[in-house]
Every structure is written in C-alpha cells, then in structure tokens.
Image (cartoon, rainbow over all chains, first blue to last red; front, top):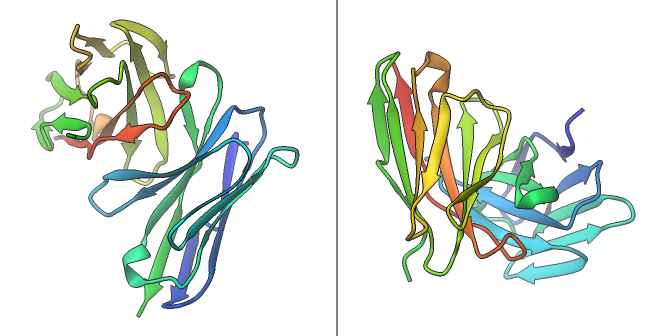
Length: 108
Length: 112
C-alpha cells in the first residue's frame, strides 16, 4: 500500500465546475504539499500545509491532520487548469513522498 | 530571481553510457533534491544533498550518484545506463525543507 493515496486518478470536468481532488496518507507527517505538473514535466508548488486551510486565487487546499487527509479544490475550473495534480508529504529527513497524481482535464 | 535551473533539457544516451545532469538551486537554498519520474510512474525520491553532503538516498542502485558543489549546485550521475533509466529527472531546492520546495523543469533522459 502506498503511503500516499490520491483519488481520483483521472478527472474530466466541464469549464466552470467545482473540482475536488483528495489525498490520504498513512504516516505522521510534518507538512503536505500540493503540486501541479503540466505537460512537458515542469512542476509548480501550489501549497504547503501543516494545518487548516489555504487559499490562492481559485485554489483552496485543506488538511485534517487527525484524519490524515487533504483536499485540493478548484473553483470555477478553466481549461488552463488541465494538468496533473500531485500530493506529496514530508516525512523524515526532508524528503518528499508523492502520490500517483490526478490527471485533470477541463473541457471548454 | 532565477528559479531552479536544470540542464540539459533533453539528453539522449545509448545503453551502457554515462549521463550527467545538472541543477542550480535558487539563491539562498542549500538543499537540493533529485527525483525520477519514469513514464507512467509517479515521482520517486533519488537523492538529497545539503551543505555539500549526501543526506539521504532513495531505493536506487549505486549507479545513481551525485554531488553538491560549494555553490550548492548539484550533479546527478547515472552510470552504465539501462533502458529503464529513461525518465524525467527533476531537481528541487529548498532552504531547509521546513519551507516550500521549488522545482526545476526537469531533464528528460532517453536511453536507446
């Protein structure tokens, strides 16, 4: 079993829809990251969370430490949001452990 | 401010050769991390360098090695290349891991 599980693996939405991507982890962590990977491979760090909720534009990330669960929400989705979204947790020694990613496609 | 820069962008090598990938971290970042993303697979941790020392390595054979220079830039070396080493290699830097990580755009290594 992976230490970090994401769902769904693939998600197709229509422009304007509200999107939720979930991440569950099985070990104690010091921080959780949400990353965005566009075709071609470049990765952008969206959020780093250790508790509560963070918002940046149309993106919202929440984490529940007790339940070992985090969600990434995208409001008013747009085709340019199409990318792979990756959840990563920081375990010991500063290394990140990654989920398998969620491929999001937003159709116009 | 320049982000994390990786070079080359693409690299094609034949089986058995050696590949050298380079990463320059953000100014002020002392930690450099290397990750491998093979086709169809998630990101896997390779190596972590901090202050010139290797701090941790992932579950990869000794053919994968690297170093960090006094200016905190880093090299990843892959010896005796195998076809399955074909992947996107991503470098990330951070100040000390307590803050965020900044990723480079990656080097796509193709072994033929």
